[in-house]
Length: 186
Ligand code: GLN
Image 1 (cartoon, rainbow, N blue to C red):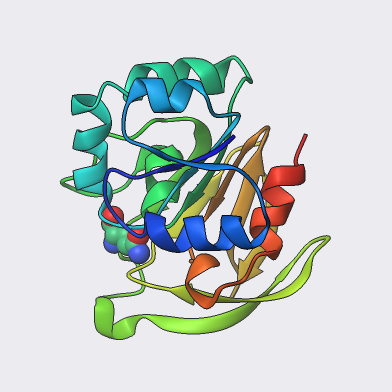
Image 2: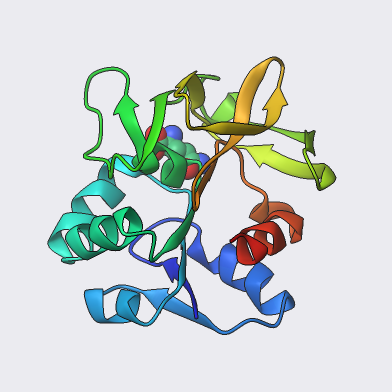
């Protein structure tokens, strides 16, 4: 079962992409929902809000435990990528999950007005259209982290074990290649 964290943010777009791949999906709002999932997508949205809801929903602890045990594959997009990071720069940083050895700088491209679309070249996949919406930048990548795609010299898609993080949104343009990669990941 592929879960999409549905506490806040653009989870509906991820569900649409997953349905196009004909996989069984679940909107994850409780620890019980999470328990039935082998994969979890953490969508874009507002990472400070989602960080709080992860705690109040009771999902935070089982999520961290299962990820650390290698029992849950996770794909975080934008706010989801921020939450996966070990280090979040600046004041008012959300309470993250600390599952990937990366540092992120929130809203590093500017405001909503500075959001843009682009094509990124992903190793093993090819060119994929994505959107950067109040996107963060990944400013540090630890030793165990692979960079799968960069944009203007900065990593925008990274993988560590069974976690992947993208600073951009692949789902808003209906692109399924990255979701397929996530589902096929060992
Ligand atoms: N700027 C948002 C944050 O810091 C992320 C934006 C997004 O997910 N598109 O949480």
